[in-house]
Length: 186
Length: 186
DNA sequence: CCGAAGCGGGAACGACCGTTCTCGGCTGAT
DNA sequence: ATCAGCCGAGAACGGTCGTTCCCGCTTCGG
Image 1 (cartoon, each protein chain N blue to C red):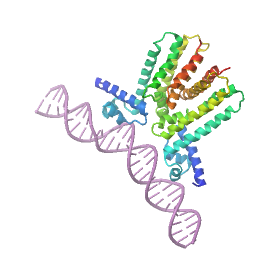
Image 2 (tube, helix red, strand yellow):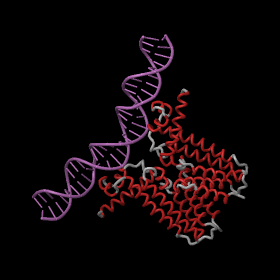
Image 3 (spheres, rainbow over the protein chains, first blue to last red):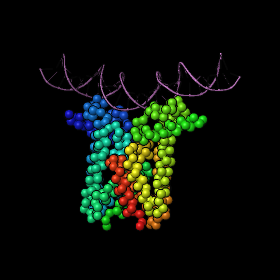
Image 4 (cartoon, protein in one colour):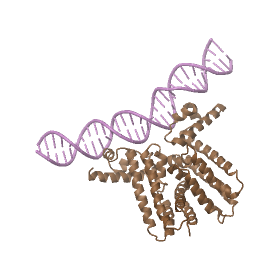
């Protein structure tokens, strides 16, 4: 695979990310990805042999980027309690962004989880990776039951995203943060 | 509209409910609804002039049924605190059901929310109706800020459903219940 | 300069889906 | 009995989408 193919892969993934996230996977055809990326269908199908595999690559890159962005935000703080709460500050900023359309992974799972087993696996892997990261943040707290606390914080993250999506308001991040603050040990 | 049409409407809605919920809306064609309901396409389109309107009717009936089931469960208790926590017990039982596939409203919103404005409105109305019901349950508690508490409980409900969907486990209901118990005034 | 291989643009194909139409048969009033 | 109108079954239509194919052009080694 040549380096012109590498560049094409990046451009295709950029286009897929924009279009899949903002319009949904089933609503976006391969020709729209060709139009936005400028990569002809022939090369596009050489880089990604099927739409299903492109969807998986889209999800894998989102996973990498999102978790890196979260870690960067959390890294701004040193106090263990603030590090956990910063997760919900990050959500709040995200909900404010113009193109916010909910969790790409949950959306993909609803749309193609039944037909694209590898995509479904990728969604679950993302969820588990985020939980593992949260578990690390919780580990340095003096929690009575760190695993249970992590699970509760995960429910708050997921619920905030989905409630923000449906209500169209960023407030659920505040509600989740307030709930998390009550659950954390002082 | 005759009563044979009424019977057809019910059979079509039954079929749509089963198929839309378990396979997704876009994955189910009108012919599969015809096959399962036994209602010929001609009559089906007289009862529901388009698939979009059938989707809205499907969501509206789900809203009615789900909220009635929730109210029935909560009604088994008289203690105000137990009435709130019973919501999460209900979720736990629901997650155990064989055909559980997440929240029909969130799924519909992800799948067709962009193309079917009336369906999107119906999803938001359901969310608001559930919140209003929760607000009633919270109202009789001695909460410092009942509205804020209601918002936090809503985030826990939504998060439990979505986390259960992706992990395939009913445990998120327990986690949400534990978090809610911590948030409720004693 | 020449032939071959690879390229991009876009047409083509096959499958599917929402919706409508056709056709043969049944019903029921006269 | 007859004729008009309605019905169910399924074919047909128009559009979309994922994927492949064709054609004319470029490029580059000999």
